[in-house]
Image 1 (tube, rainbow, N blue to C red):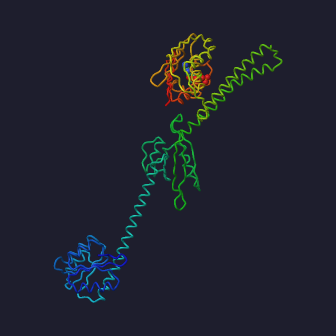
Image 2 (image 1 turned 180 degrees about the horizontal axis):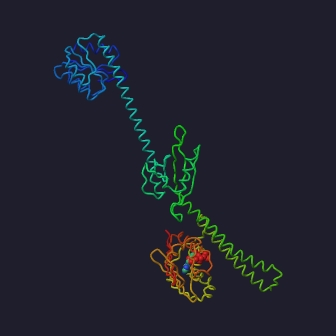
Image 3 (image 1 turned 120 degrees about the horizontal axis):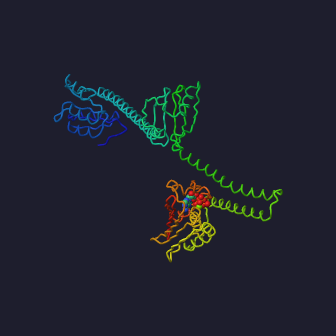
Length: 495
Ligand code: ATP
Ligand code: MG
């Protein structure tokens, strides 16, 4: 059995053979595609396995009656237009057939014209039903689409990092997302609440400005707001008026962005710049002072004194050069543009040469050095200048921050794949809160004990960067007033 999709499909269910055949022939000549069934059972079978446009069902059949066939087809395909054909139409059966969904009656016997007229009416009805069905489906899809679109938008707004608040002209909240609550440090906003007075003053000012102006412009006003003190939470609020379709003002939308990190970086940057400037200024001023004295003929100073001033200038200039080199090193390490010369480095040798290099300072403070270095320590693959740098910084700190007649203990041994090197001093030590910032650039503990010790605060930050670049780590242990121990773990085999 084939169902033609172009032509309208008609099912004829009738047990009277000659009538069935004649009807089929007639309708086929009219251009319909026709299938016929010779009893009620077959009628149900065919009519419920394919959707027909029209079904013409005989009321009285020996096996199953036409009403039964009708209701079966209708329950499967409610849009099939069904006619009951009968010579015994009664008021009661008409009512029942209509209730079961019949579109009409075709009294038997019928003329070809009568049949065709009825079928055409049925086809019109079928088209109307299908069109209504299509529209309904389309509307439902559209509604679904809108609902999806809305929920999608909602999801986006709810999940973005920026806070969003919409406030109407009465100052009531009409929309918000949770990021907004987070950034405002507020817990309990609800839609409809009059929230405007609970917002930061900066936002209230912008709101007032927008709603009190006679003609508003769709323009965004921004303000930075410190929500939590000490720059713990800083946001930028962007406030924009929203217009009604008629152009009048509807309310405002506030977008809140978290700019705490930017603020922190800004602060670090300006601190860095002012510290660098400060560190550069002091030695430059000193050198300038010495030169002025030497140049001032009226002072009449001896050659010997001049020489001394020049020597002191030279020392100052050297410290300036060191500082600039430190800064350059830090920036090269950060930009990773530093060229390395990797070779086998013997830690014991580096420690010895560093001690030698700092001999003068060690003697000045009368410091005792106590070394305990495991014999035959394996060498490590590294740039010797960088490793020397690490120990120069650690030892110079151990000297600088030591007491007169103090001691420095240096130990080194192997533990699995690591060289463990400890530098312990009997110096001023540090407080726990100082310990935390120790490795920050330019950090210098400020207390009565460090007041007269000069330095840039860059040494340890460089040490840490170098150690970490060799996949090692550095730790510090300290008791204020008693001394400090730095421990370095350096992998022997960096693979
Ligand atoms: P630089 O080393 O650049 O000349 P610096 O010694 O001040 O200057 P760091 O080596 O980075 O800078 O040390 C930072 C701070 O840590 C020091 O100013 C000091 O307060 C503290 N510190 C470092 N080493 C010790 C130590 N061994 N004992 C006590 N405090 C120390
Ligand atoms: Mg130092």
